[in-house]
Picture: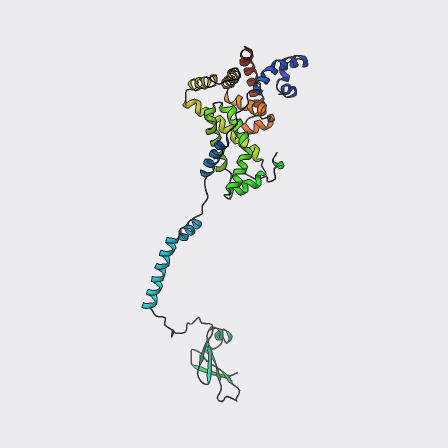
Length: 168
Length: 184
């Protein structure tokens, strides 16, 4: 400890600088003895042991999503899950074959029905295009290959009381 | 001190909080000797020091997430170390018979080849044991770690005036206890 540091601590306890210096000299031998008491160093093994324990015992933040992800990433779980899903799909396919002739949903945007000579367009898109008509549909007719197609709008008014046929 | 290292403490802390073990090890090895020195001077019993150091690092790694960047890690670590060592010493004294532990320590040192040197060290150790743990902590940080009084006050969570009183009393008590013994 330097004299300045010592002075900072004991300045008020002594009346003169000389007294303070004399007191400091009395402390010097004690400081020398204290300096002869070094701290023994830790071995590298001790340091490593302490680090490993402290590091392993720290709390680890694991979110529930990553916990589930890690669970399903396990090969055995993934394998079993694959078999279960496969069985479910096969069972569904065998018992409920896909119905390809499902009725047209009211919400279908555009439905096209084709025959040899006509194409009929109907659906939500046509209804929004002609909101004043009920059940509007546009029919494209081509009587001969060389003749231009005829576009006709069919629909009703007043709850079906009036039928509208409009050549476009 | 931190700016002399190629990688700052803050960068190592960020990596360590993400689970980077190497970064944590680097941070640990950078500061472990100082932590050990402070623990040794406050706890005094060599058989207990490693457990105390372990406790400090457990606290550090547990609360690393809560460490605010922009603050000095070294200063925060000093606070954790000094307070953990003070608490550890108090618990240790409560749990065990200090007198017996001390006796065993003297015998161990007395069998050493350098008996005279060991005797002086033992006298210092005894003198340090006889002052209160708060005085010893303040004195250790000021005298051995060369820490300014204001920083010691922040570290120990008390007023600067209290720190000065602790150090003064520690110095006077040490001189009183060591003056007669060291020159025998």
